[in-house]
Length: 453
Image 1 (cartoon, one colour):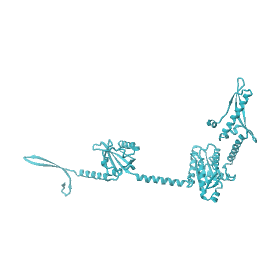
Image 2 (image 1 turned 90 degrees about the vertical axis):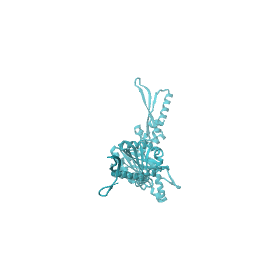
Image 3 (image 1 turned 180 degrees about the horizontal axis):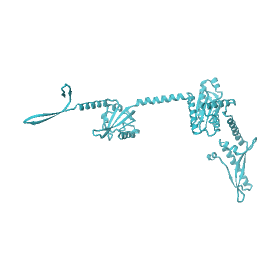
Image 4 (image 1 turned 30 degrees about the vertical axis):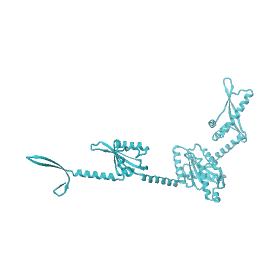
């Protein structure tokens, strides 16, 4: 240590050389001020102490992945001492689960490519616990600027992640509770309003139709009044399950209050398709419900509004479906009504026609006519095409264009095809037995009939 004229001291590095000078032995002293060097060493020593005592993990490796430095934080987090890990490969299986080995290599590659790289990775502690860590990998250089290794700085975020996961679950639960009915777990009025607006936006953008069905259980109040609300709640849960069986993937079924439900059917092909949905709902509600020895029969009145036919406005569509539902109650309950009186009339006529079709088979009202196939070269008959007609007792002879499409929409077309096939084959056989040659019999079959086979 040297002392300046002002009394302050400073460190020097001294080099002493002994020489002979003019017959005498003398010492030559070279002093170099090393104040900055001492400061740098102190700073490095302090940083080393900080790295050694920091609670986060600091692990350094050479370019081959061999661990060269393992601080106290690495021991705290991983459970292994420096003596156990220095000289080991950082990819050693004790530090990382097998599914993370590829990621370890990826982190090293990215650090070498970009100089520094951050990511998250799971690790295994000495006692076998799985922990989640934030990791920052950065390159190490020597004085010449050459890359000689990689330092991995890791923070244990397991507790933080567990808290975040719990918050996510709680947030999800709160969101579910905010937008779903507590009893049936179906979307509530708030979520229904949102889905209805989304349906309008989507249908408008893609030029599509959709139906809104308003479903109100008939005489449900009597169950609450006579058996109590506990039984009423159980019935509502059963009804919700049954209604859910009518849904397509993109449909939305909601409980909007009390014994009222709504159903949104997207991308409606035709207006008449809404009738099928309503019929299906009425059918699934038919089976009796038995609770603690009490047998209950549940029916529903259903009102239907259509987008964009009835309205393009959210509130109007809901109001019109509600109006149609009350119309269904006025018509005797356990039925459905369209907001449009014309649609209701057409749906009713269609329902009457469907019922009459089934009776027609039972009462043998169908008649098979034969269209001859002619070889125009000699005007000979080479075949017959079987064509069905409906000989209705009140409406007279009905041609296929009036009832085939209706039969196609249901499984009735299969019964009708079977009837025509049996009748036509019987008739052809009889013609051959009479010595006639009607040729080849042609039959028109529905694709639904062919799919059976």
